[in-house]
Length: 442
Image 1 (spheres, rainbow, N blue to C red):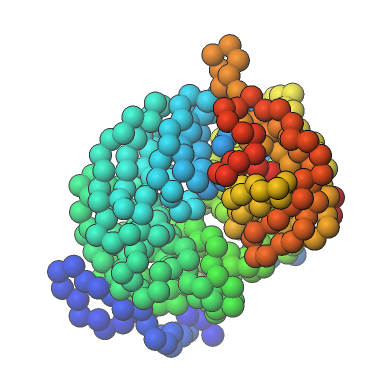
Image 2 (cartoon, rainbow, N blue to C red):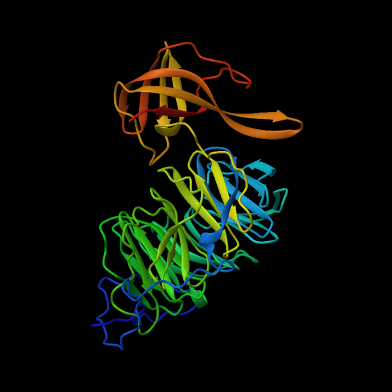
């Protein structure tokens, strides 16, 4: 039994329609079977170095401000979105070209073109010029924005009022609005005004501009974390908890998606072309091929639980970032001598100091970060910026040691067990609002 990905619903809309999500999935329709790759289809053809992204080599690794939220890339630049700032790096060598403070934007709220950068703040869409991040136009939002998906000339914004608005970036005017109920967990812009919305329980609904809507697959029970259409819009990647599925899209798509053995907990994805997609998660940076179902890791992959974002420029370049602000990039060419991304052993989490009283340090950890157990011995590192020869460098400096007293939700209380060391910063080394990293041996 096969079914179509988008099924028509009679919704009779005019003007700027508000489309209600379907309460039940449309009945499946029998269609001719579509070709599906098989893991036993024979030997994989030899990789062409000119087109195979797994032949990229690691070219540089740079520390940027922590609490990384997203990455974007142009032919010349890498744009890094942290919790309350943007940074522009030279794509060839990672040199920091510009930095500026911004709003506190949600995850994956940045997009870049050769001309500039777009960032969705809760109150509006803000443009910046490259490479200096000079402020450009600002489009106010009718309701605070929570999730955004950018395409070439539009932005899909899910807001607090239960609507997803399709906004033209040139004018800031919404061309359509869709009533989706609870704010989606993820959005993906599709072809000709369509889009997909992922929900808390793993439900994915595809909306068409004329009012059609249909569910894709079955709910997984986990919130949708990553949702990405392929460049030719013939595949849709859906990641929800331990589930990763790549659905073929079209009127004769097979009922079952493509699945990749051993790929888990994907938190970010970018298509490198119509058949290959790069993902990040606990298994590091992986490249998946929807034709052969092959899974390959990039050379020099930093791996680890901290990777949260990925950006790509076709098959020519790829960058990945961890929540602590470390950005690593790969490109074509001979391998370069790149220092290890993080040579220190053990587990780690980043957070913000909320108080320091009588040598008891309280740290609010970032959402999703691993947490130490009570009585664990930790090393405390402080984030700092230093300037040498007119070049600013971001570093983590070891400043103290401690023992965990308690862990409640994301709040970690520590007893300092030695003196607080030196750091080249203004004011106290450890104080309210300071960004720190905790390291411990599991």
